[in-house]
Length: 306
Ligand code: COA
Ligand code: ZN
Image (cartoon, rainbow, N blue to C red; front, side, top):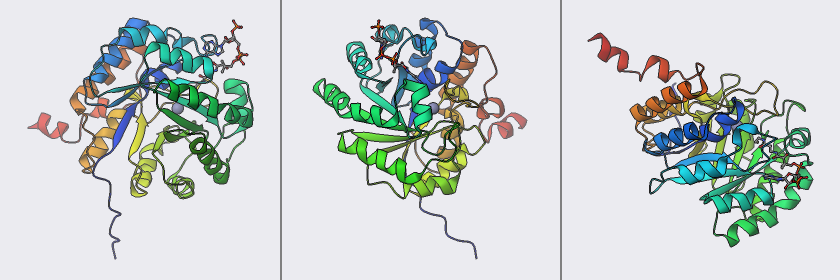
């Protein structure tokens, strides 16, 4: 007998992370290009855009100049413009630049955390409550991201119990939401269920990479588990410079195309998004892994053949 599929959520929120997670892994591009990409994305119906990172410019050269990007974008009402920060200096810079929300990132695996921010996971987590206080004093919400939540390129499997403990620590520190990062695409659907099933009720985002082709399968698993917030990168730009073998995030237009067809409302105009993916390819100067950009939406070929 065919099993009744799980009821899917009626809607989902997609956060566009290409201008940060995507571009941080490319050769640095001009501030003007970063600005026009964010501005085009702002007009697609996306409600959250990760504009940049306030990290050390020597650590991630493509993110130098994030202040200028924030200063020059044309803000569309209703869109939340967010920034990734590694420490207190990052929170200060994000505040000065007018970010609407900051994301603090700590890796579940200590080796990855040390490569990324030169601290152990425990050292980084100890600093989180003070960062939350700083951000809240400036009326900025904070998201706590657990990177390498489904596996680490240096250490291999990561214990889901450790991931759940870090989520608890973020919430205890006062974070407004949490995000699980599959930094190098090591999740599969059953691992997604295994980790999510251990978490307390909270505002949760999944940040998936499609390194091993499991990205959208993981989204379906998470939808069935009730998760309604997903990160994705236009065109599929992305990776992590401190993670060998990392490739792009799941592709925003592929995700929106699938969700909309499944009756999960995203509020995003797919045609406008595909145009942004073409712009992203032009900006980075290489072919990106997007599939909907190449093939068009599922009925496009039919229309063309008519
Ligand atoms: N932005 C700009 N400069 C910063 C900074 C920030 N967020 N944080 C620290 N600095 C500066 C300090 O002011 C100090 O400058 P000085 O030498 O002129 O006094 C210098 O960097 C060293 O400070 P320290 O606190 O010792 O930092 P560090 O050298 O241990 O580097 C990080 C730590 C977190 C700043 C750095 O590793 C980093 O930016 N990593 C980001 C990694 C990343 O973004 N990965 C991808 C996303 S997951
Ligand atoms: Zn990522």
